[in-house]
Length: 362
Image (cartoon, rainbow, N blue to C red):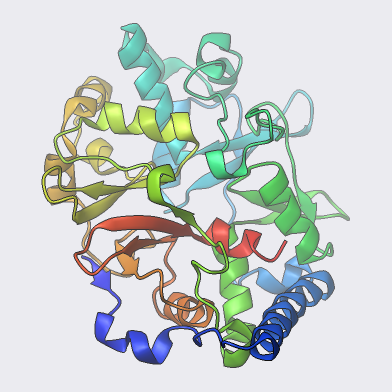
């Protein structure tokens, strides 16, 4: 269910209009820099311990178990990712995510391989398959964060294990997530190499918002003016008539976790589709049925999606005129993964992700 930010509230939430004098502009720049520096300093003194929940669970997979069983375990525990443990090497060797399993299904569809064999293939088998690693599991960075030559400089979490100590500061955690183009960062207890949790941009943003949501004047510029997000022709969109396979390929190609779905005629927002959406898998009776469901259109799939607005991947919209402070307040209420920026006609003009918001302060 879409949760649009009311246009009528813009006057109250939009950033202060730039003054006509140099003095006013100078003051605004000082306030902006003060707000940014306050966050930077906060990240430098806060440890990763501070973003961990008081209670929680961690699922770790032995690389010898079937990948299909691992996926079902993630779904059962309502988790997006889990560290991988190699018993022969006696160490963690990577991370497996829900989207990895979806991408493996895409590989079986594209190559025409017998999907029934997937039931007996272990995680180690899949991660040793160069055909899979070099195609559907190859990491592509978002265009906005790619290096100057367009190549990804981050480590591949399927072949290496990147983590952070629990007593490391949040600035290090943020830079690891951002510089290595990671979505999940394991937090380790240094004394016994135990994984305490996996943190994400959303975890860090939630911590920032809980500490800074009351400091209104420091964050009174609009997200557009601050350059937070992706806008205009750089925004990747999908259409209701496209198949799930087509959309998943587009998301992988552009290194995106989700894409706004727009009406082909009016260009108005219809919804948002996430790579981690497993609706097509829960509706399947077996692996063959799951691969077949990759041919379903977004129109069909979106009608089957959960409409609970508390779902992080639910559609939430904003305007380019909304302030960073308002986004902080809105995130505190809904805990979203991204905001879709729309104009007065509900046409998509931009996308602001949790990663964009955290990256602004790095």
